[in-house]
Amino acid sequence: MDRVIEFSTNHPLLIASLLAVLAALVANEYLNYRRSRQAIDATDATRLYNQDAAVFIDVRNENAFQASHLPGAINVPMAYIDQRQDRLKRFKQRTLVVYCDNGQRTLKAIQALEAQGWSDVRQLRGGINAWRDASLPTEGRG
Figure (spheres, rainbow, N blue to C red):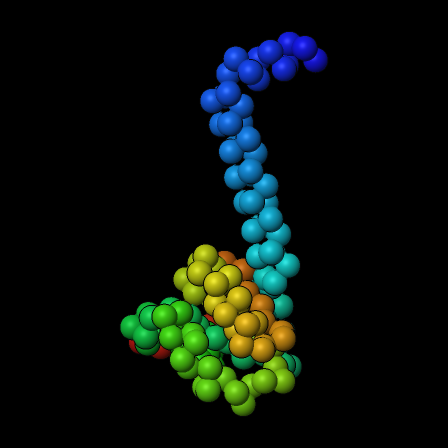
């Protein structure tokens, strides 16, 4: 134990680096946990949608939405998530399934929607890319 203390006092930069790496690992695991807790795969999203219990919310920009989107999806670009909540009011009793291209931006959208009072908001794990990989249909020009 004395050697650990001696090493720590002789190499504070190494110890600080170790603590920074550990903190980054813990933060990454926490964020992954938060994402996975709210994430559903394409099969579960399809089931919810078919039961008329879910609405797809596309947070990509309008050009990407026009090119290709999930069936029946509503486009609320991430940049306007706070201003366009009126487009979603009629779906207050349904689950919102939020997606982007690959699922990386949706956590921020989920947080914004939950702050606006939405109680059941989920992330489509993998975004529209995972939807396409599962060979599920899309709408749009592309």
